[in-house]
Length: 319
Image 1 (tube, rainbow, N blue to C red):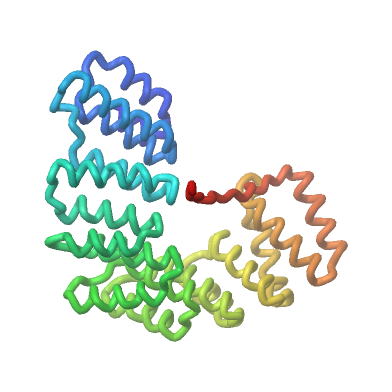
Image 2 (image 1 turned 45 degrees about the vertical axis):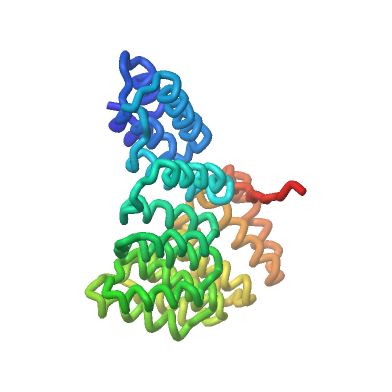
């Protein structure tokens, strides 16, 4: 019941079900913690996990001792939290070492994924090397982590090592390797890996096409990016159009942007895509079309367009 309500997004009811249970076993604690972590409610998820550990300690109840499935869910959440979840992720790793758990492929991959997403690529590689066995999920976690943090060449080397070991890539692996090509500006390599998707018996997804648009666009090859959008077998979404327009702004290719503005404006939603409105308005200003910029700003006011405010985290070291 807890999992069912959580999957429907009804976390308050799921928590009521949890709180009213006369007896709670490891499964119920894990389900409620996972519900919070899966819905990006990190603080509540970690607090409940701590509460479970305290209950287990106070009652000397071995039945509440976390297993690999429970800790895997917590580690996944720590990875999505970035550096803010790293401290807790390290403590989970310490728990594993203290209890002499075997580093099997499933749990080892969780640790690799957490460290890679938090930017500790060397630590992720160390964990990976300690695993007796590895699969495409573990390799993909390494590759995506390297790409996410700007280590494009390292991601490409990992991909080649994966192929040499006999592990075949999946769709997510190619998303990671194409992202690495975008970050490093490796156009020729990006083209080669995109062709390789079909060679491996896979179908390119809209994410793969989006990476190609981003790669060509950031390198100033707006014509090629536009051709990818027009020829791909998917209807371009707001993310792809936003990437294309951002590249047009970056390279001051305003005439190219004007070709697609009408299409984009028919697609955007005021409640979700405030950034696109602002992007188009900025391009009008940069190209000297002040009347168009003012018209769009008034439209944003009339439609109550909301732009998500930017935020960032700074990790400091106490001296």
